[in-house]
Image 1 (cartoon, rainbow, N blue to C red):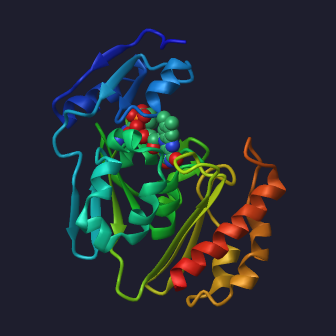
Image 2 (image 1 turned 90 degrees about the horizontal axis):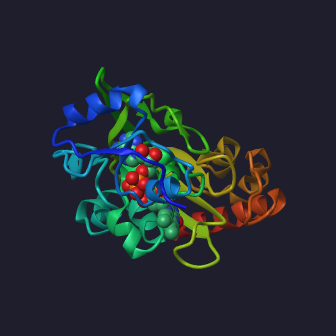
Length: 275
Ligand code: FAD
């Protein structure tokens, strides 16, 4: 199949892009790396009236460490994140997740903003954002607002983004020297979407556990977080606590299989965090 007819705009400024996005009647959609949107258009799952290409807009990409946070522009590509010393030093959980995202060709084009906005239930970075307590910086013709990752991801392909709004960037708390992180995904072939995965963080004295590819989007499991404890010694109690996780089956396995894989992934991520 080929995409249905659409118009295309390549604005040079954010203001121009926001004005195009604000015209709801024109049915605009933002184009970032196009690694998900192009196939979705070709399958006619997405039928934008106008594509608003964000690739020429200055200031939407970049990685800035400021104080105790790292702000990443929405159009920053996975490849740039993987090559960044700032990410390697301050955001070890992001660095751990990146090699698991698709293949090099897709990482060359795919963007962090596109991943957050799409909210694919099997995507790695939304779960990392939840585990790290990241903040989404949103912008529209009406102004800007910040939304915590906890309030941003609403379900499968569903976020707090309102019509006309763009993700401008994502801020992550920089890792402290005593913070611990673990990441693990179970996958048939490296580069495929995960069958189950988890990001685990103990940062600033609080534990956060976020799963992906097990249900209706990236999701925390608070009973498992409470059971784990800040030294992760409660792993044997945390795995049964996954009975509280809202798991659903997919082509990779039924609900029981997914719940089992979630437990395996959690044990391995915690082992990594405590190694
Ligand atoms: P696009 O495809 O351009 O856009 C995706 C959606 O987000 C669209 O609805 C678009 O309108 C919207 N959007 C984009 N940017 C913004 C913004 N700044 N503000 C508001 N809305 C925006 N991803 C994984 O996480 N893990 C994987 O293992 C994985 N495997 C893949 C394998 C294949 C074969 C392919 C084709 C893709 C895979 N992906 C995977 C998806 C890939 O990571 C995409 O790049 C990503 O999901 C979307 O990023 P993008 O920049 O390409 O966004």
